[in-house]
Amino acid sequence: MADEAKVLEAIEIARNTGKISKGSNEVTKALERGTAKLVAYAGDVNPKEIVMHLPLLSKEKEVLCVEVSKKDDLGAAVGLSVGCAAVAITKEGDAKALLKELNA
Image (cartoon, rainbow, N blue to C red; front, side, top):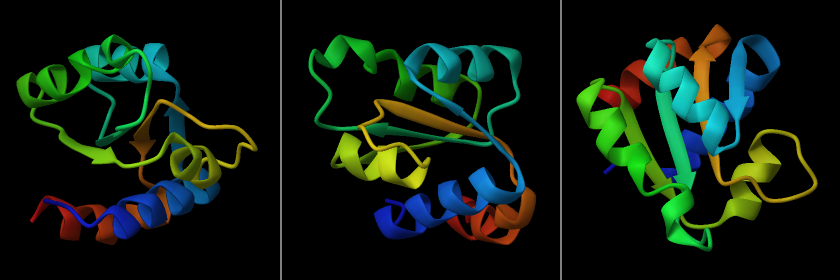
């Protein structure tokens, strides 16, 4: 299991130096297009159906998928003042080394 703090850090770094997709619809599109490098989704999303498909799709596309406990933490990592259900890193930027470590 990947370290939640490292995942959030990677998202923050990618937000500043690379590119991210926010929200379950955007994350789903990134996975389907094959551009997602890492997917994180919030465990406290209600209803669960919003993010339920992400772990399965990530596994199919061989992309690391991590559950983060709170959507507020995910929202903060992507620079929002509100919670965020799901995030995908599409261009790593300076988070490349951290992603390698998480995927190891």
